[in-house]
Image (cartoon, rainbow, N blue to C red; front, side, top):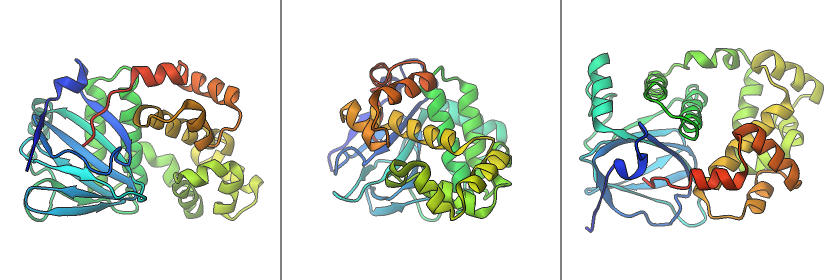
Length: 285
């Protein structure tokens, strides 16, 4: 089987890690490869085929995988089966130093059956915290990433694997279950396009009651929450998709392009085009 070697320096360009949010993956077939770094993949939505030298595993929503330098692999999706994957890659020496500090095995940091990459199924209760950990490290990567961001990410991730929500989710954990479920379902692109109307439908309560509960449990209004989720998705699409910016805005629920530009600049400090140019390189696992 033909194999390519990837090197962390090709992607980090002096930064302590690389992070990406990948829709697809981009092509139906990923190139078989190994690398000189560690990476973690998290299937946030959908399912993909994880091809290894001796087998092929089906990864689905909630699956987390640590791929080690010695693990040759590729990730492939089926046409018509969309998937959203978070991917964070980091130097081997950084991960091994961290594992030495907290006294865990760098190559076997959590229980997993069989040989090869370490796979774990995140519990439904911990999925929101796991997605949040990846979204935070992605946000840090698109700004001024530091080793501290990476350490916080690792700590959050290991907490999620243990089945507990990270401490920075305390406020959201006080939310009623119907609200947490509605917020989880809003991550689907079709629901995001529906905006507040769709959120109210998923919650099954009045708009006024939804607003009161979101303010009390999460400290945001429904409008602010929807815009944050839409902007995060648009930022991910800008760096993982060749789609036109107008198309991305519409896909994320913004039919007013000037309004989208204004919100995006306020959130990320630059235009969508500038953001795409700055963050265009990404590792496809």
